[in-house]
Image (cartoon, rainbow, N blue to C red; front, side):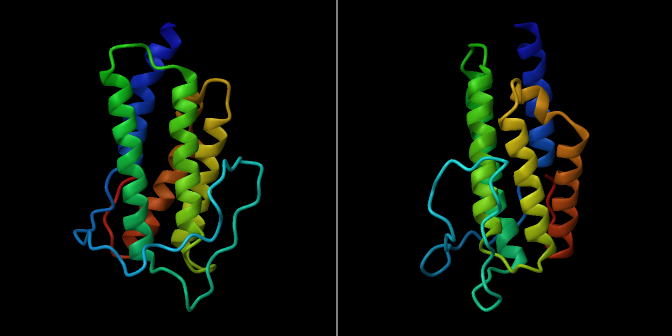
Length: 167
């Protein structure tokens, strides 16, 4: 129990530092919504990444980062709700949050161009979130250098796309 209690602040801090807002002020919806290249399903870290969009249909890197912001905001809301509930968050809750993050980041990556550095960073970040989600102790698994490195790579890719963000 103490390990989970100690893991919660570590996961929350790491996640909030790595997954803060993309910084885009434009919250205007795009015409027709964002396309989804894959049907909604529970992806696992062992499954191959979905194909990315054709160059003509690809979402811009800035839009990818703004979509990642929405996934980040959802995850932060879930973490805050878990911490605020007053009860000890379970590994299943962390698994659900990280799995949802993985699914959304992978979906967002599928809408970008295959040669995009943001897409590559999103895919790596999604893979690390999936690994943590599938671990016996997801909170502890999310607190690792590979997850942090994937977040730093995504931050760097979004900054190059003109979006200041910290993942």
